[in-house]
Amino acid sequence: AQTVTQSQPEMSVQEAETVTLSCTYDTSENNYYLFWYKQPPSRQMILVIRQEAYKQQNATENRFSVNFQKAAKSFSLKISDSQLGDTAMYFCAFSAYNFGNEKLTFGTGTRLTIIP
Amino acid sequence: DAGVIQSPRHEVTEMGQEVTLRCKPISGHNSLFWYRQTMMRGLELLIYFNNNVPIDDSGMPEDRFSAKMPNASFSTLKIQPSEPRDSAVYFCASSFDGNYGYTFGSGTRLTVV
Image (cartoon, rainbow over all chains, first blue to last red; front, side):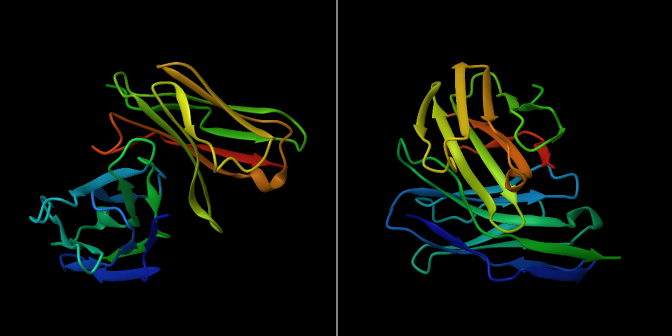
């Protein structure tokens, strides 16, 4: 079974600063996918970024980037030039790369507040 | 594309009543997932379907919960009888072959009084 751990229940940063959210996971799978989802107060779950475990290059989506350390089973999210609209819950999630096991396993989330 | 569509957005019901939540996945997606979100337990997978067939229902809490996917464009999650501890936000999500990213619906907030 896979587990995902987010050790920072809450974080806050000033607008325009950079913030890093931590995530570690445990799995015996060799091929898998990792995701970060954002859940603003509207409760909609929004995919922020996705990383394939077989790719060494870290994924980047505009202001969002990840630091994927496969050996350490670490998958942190960096938000650059943070904006007020980044205020939300952020969930790290894992999915195995095999049929019958594609379900997403979520961490407990980090509540991020961007301070004006 | 309209995305994953869930209905109703809010549901308030009395204990003991039957509740049916509905989901329309994105056209072309072949996997559908039902999740429950609570403060205490976070996001839990209840059941997921691949090509309309239930693959893993180990997260369904008990026999009061049932889910169906009669065709590729519709799924239901039914709770009968409902209990106050079923109060939560229920999400439906769909994907194509699972791992390219899951698209979530806007959720149904269920309150059982």
